[in-house]
Length: 296
Image 1 (cartoon, one colour):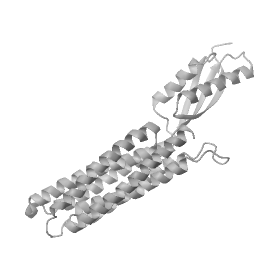
Image 2 (cartoon, rainbow, N blue to C red; image 1 turned 45 degrees about the horizontal axis):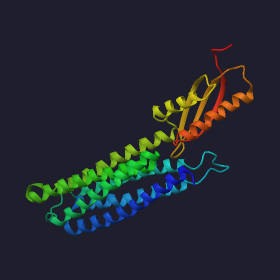
Image 3 (tube, helix red, strand yellow; image 1 turned 45 degrees about the vertical axis):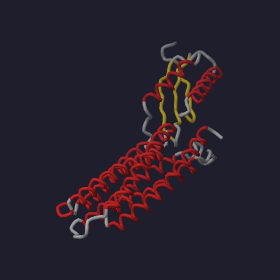
Image 4 (cartoon, rainbow, N blue to C red; image 1 turned 90 degrees about the vertical axis):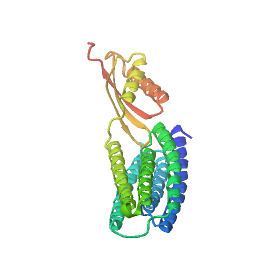
């Protein structure tokens, strides 16, 4: 099993745990929010239900992205994982709109204040989502997983929205006569936060699908490794595009124009081997050999 396949398998396990945790939180929040008459708690539960779908998409993307390269997909299936991140962003945005609409409908309603026990599911959500978000951010950034980082942002937003819902709920319970609608405004705030999070995830995933260059340190590291190989006189160009958890790179080397084709090929092969062995983020390198323009 390759390092890429191991990383995807570990990411799939994290996504599976997230599906189960979000499902339990959703049931817990919706049930107690309904029983206690709290719009913001029900909104949080609805958001967690969307998280189940989002994490399931991440899980599917991880598993499909782990499939090895074949004749029709010589670069592998890694971009399925990026598409999963894009779909998570869309799910968040649509879910946020639904939460906003539902909460706005209830603002003018007159009803008894929410029960005190509706605080418990929100507190549980903050704790669980804090753990999930931390794990996903740490591992997702380590393996450069667009979908897992997107899901981590989703959990981070859940924490903020749960806090907003809790604040609104506390205000309503403190003075129901004056702040009865605060609970509904809390639900509306949850929806807005979810929408903005979804748009951020869509932007980040779209940039990767558009072959946006990676961080400069990755490019600089490839140049440094290439220059350490004997008889490499310069690196004219260095590009990279993400194809899942890793990058495929294009490198233009400058060599002595008087060496043989075989010697140039051997230099290029050694550069490719050194980069792949040194940088786990690089899946493969296409090396093009050019004559050093400074030599006759």
